[in-house]
Image (cartoon, rainbow, N blue to C red; front, side, top):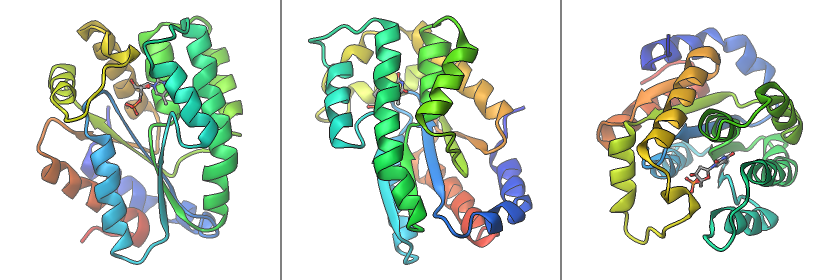
Length: 234
Ligand code: TMP
C-alpha cells in the first residue's frame, strides 16, 4: 500500500533515532513525479518555507545540477540528438555521479539541507519502468554506484494523472519541446505505475495526490517537513 500523508507523518516521527543519527549532516529531501506534477514549484515553495525558519538550504535538480550536468541535460533533452535508451541511461548516471560528488554530498557534510528535483526514482521509473531496459537489477546496482549509495531522508512523490500532468506542462509559459514531449500517454502511465510501486515499497517515500491545487499539496508537504525537522506537524 502506498504511504499517504498520515502514514508518512507517523513514519517520520517513528524515525527519531534515524533523525538523531543524521544530525551531523543536512537532510536530503527529494521530490519525484511525472511531467506536470508540480515538483519544481513545490521545491521552490519548500525552500521558502524552510528558509523562513532560518535553515541552511540549497535546491538543485537532475539532470543538470552541475556545469557538466547542464551539458548532459542539453544533450539528453535537445531534439538534435537521439540517444538510444542505453546511452540515455548512462548520461543520466553520469549526471548523477557528478552531482552527488560535487554538489549534494559537500552540502550535506556542511549540515545544509538539500532539496533535489528528481533523483534515483526518476531513473528507475523512466529507464526501467517506461523504457523497459533489460537487466533491471544490474541497472539498480549501477545507479546505486553512481550516487555512492547515498540515500535520501525523505522522498516526496507527487502523484498526478498523466492526462492532467501533460496538459499542465503544455500550457506552461516558456515550455520548449524536448525529446521527452513526444511520448504518448502509455509511456507516462508506465512512469506513474513504477513511481507508485516505488512509493509502496520504499520506506522513505511518501505519496501525495498532486491532482489537487498547489496550495493543498504544499500544505501536506509543509506537514511532512515540520515532522521531519521538528518531530511534529503544526
Ligand atoms: P525535468 O522534468 O526535470 O525537466 O526532467 C527532464 C526529463 O528527464 C523528464 O522527462 C524525466 C527525465 N529523466 C529520466 O528519464 N531519468 C532520470 O534519471 C532523470 C533524472 C530524469
